[in-house]
Length: 340
Length: 193
Image 1 (tube, rainbow over the protein chains, first blue to last red):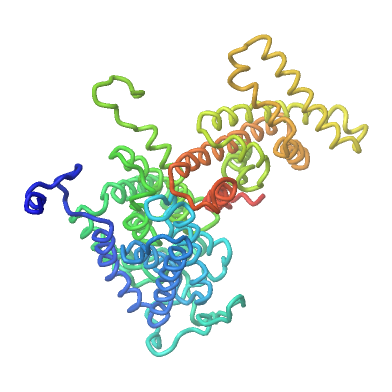
Image 2 (cartoon, rainbow over the protein chains, first blue to last red; image 1 turned 90 degrees about the vertical axis):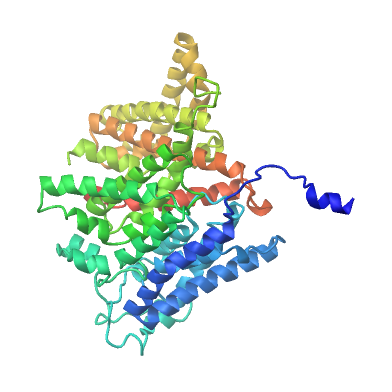
């Protein structure tokens, strides 16, 4: 009997798989993010390293505690929480007090992910939920940016980083500077496209270098671990809209390359909007979803009160995603109407 | 941007009644579990909002200058009875429409969103057409919030939500996340209020 069991295996389908699993894909996403994270540390120095580590540590800790309390097998080893933690850290301004960073990390994993049942159920991107709460709770901390490539960035950190928990941080103006988007919005200063591509500007830890983000995205797309149609749809929408607006009134609106390369659009489009759970399922669905993110981003950036709107655009599109899935539901094979 | 368009966009997105003013939350949580019913409640909301706006404008121009102390009570009584009256007319004239919208009308008539609309409209000094646009915008904003909420709730129903969070707790948190996402519209087109 034992020898029979070896040759005759009883299994349900699928019998042929590509070998993809949650932890394999998530591990590759982490690798794709490593260049961006390393550049963030290089550009902003020790501060960025502390912010990234605090974000990662708080997310991992929250995942471990919540799995333990809910008496479920630990999901730490599937790397998904590492992706959440890393992405969350990359969207934060370096120099954000560590206690704020960690609070947001707990919220991202606790409210954004585990409250809805854990991996595979989150309606919103967990990292962005954490960031949105931070933006609402600590608007000053979240919009105080430290200049990139400061001279003493590897020897000292700003005092704001280690503010006592629940105390307001103090910032010195000498260290802070405006992001390209804020500079355009409030001072009408257009940053050079070459600086934006390479990342020689200020901003959140991981949003400055467009080329490294695209490199990571291309790697994931080539390995079929990311739906490239989502970022493409976002980029095309933003480019077309901005190009048309700039053509109509070059004075009032920035150029298309500036809109594409500045702020969190690259990071958001490539790594956040492509969240497998929170985005629609069909090809037509993701194209609509991407276009919606593009339109909302342009609307909030150009006419809204805030310089940056990618985070809100993605969260809103996440909320619309179930409706997009419903609208573009494919016809059931063998039936003619949409209602099978 | 023209004044009417500004009022409309502001009521739908920037100062969404449900997600920014947190008005009319009882029907928002009560009837958002199914998309179909949520959408119909939204339509009924637009309908009642328009009636409210007309009532509030008529009261404000015809009656209240003579008796300003009657504002709150007259708004409530007149709006509620007008909606009830319209409900009876619809029931008689179009049973199909009544079936689609009628059952929601009593649910909305006496909620804070309706009174809020009447009060905002008078305190901002809107004229007749401004009030109508404001009412349609506010109703559409509530519909938008209801539809988004229903979509998310239908998804959450299929999820493995932990026992402590199931039900109203999760719904409140989802609504909070939606409200956070709507914060992105703050200050749209230079709107402050």
